[in-house]
Image 1 (tube, rainbow, N blue to C red):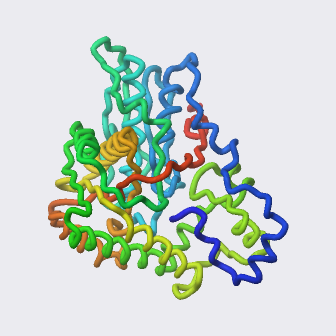
Image 2: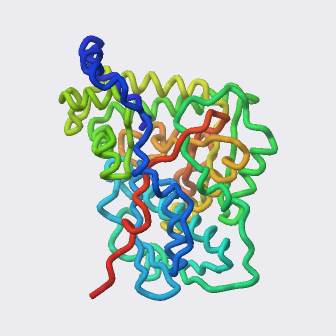
Length: 387
């Protein structure tokens, strides 16, 4: 979902009248919602310091569906917050598992920075099945002091990593930068690839698949409504929730305040709200200079988590190289309407679905920097002590 693009909802005359009283409002996000992006001070419990880095991990729709149990000393047990799922666009919770992986990778990077070895046990009470999730932990980390542990250079990028959904410039990523991104995922054994303007016909096929997948998601009422339901519009909502898709554009705030944007109902496929979104994003795709992808053999839950760990490393490495990255998950989603784009991108990337899975597909390029997304902070993710 693209920030600040839902402004194409009402007619021009209504918009002008609506915005008259808020012309001086800023589209910047409220500082209270961004407090988690301030590097943490050391505390008595190093685990909270580690978690202050992990909660900055990328997550689908910025839902931040992480819960941790700190009830055992020197241990962190991670759970999936099942109140924060995407059942329409992510029916089998593959993206949720990847987001568990991004969290684990940042925990591990932070632990290394403090001379700790994070011994990660995935699914310590047995693994979820392929199509559902439950209340069992997704991982357990034991933190062990180890003089042999060395910091990872990617740690330095955690507070600079932001997903950039804006337009990218035409310049293709430099070869050395692409190699740095590819090398970063080596610990997690995924196959990666890149395409840029050196293969114009192939690049256009990537763009076309992405456009069709985006059109489907925007034109399917239940998937569009799922995104509407996590929109946070205006300072009050953004500060209250500190998650989801945050929009502080004065125009949309005014439209919402006037009751002209009903988030309880999906916009019609032929509405200005939907057609404007499609046109805006198609323009960004048409100018995207490169794409990055990750493919795994198999698609079990451990593979999905490890793919998430690999992805955040790739994005941190891209950040270090001055590159921006924006996931394109629509064509990778497993609801029926996306069957065509799903088959198309798997075929294009030599990933037969019977044996391989495209876990990540992303825009890649150089772009002006963007700010961070809201985060709920460490305490919001810690489970209360057991009675």
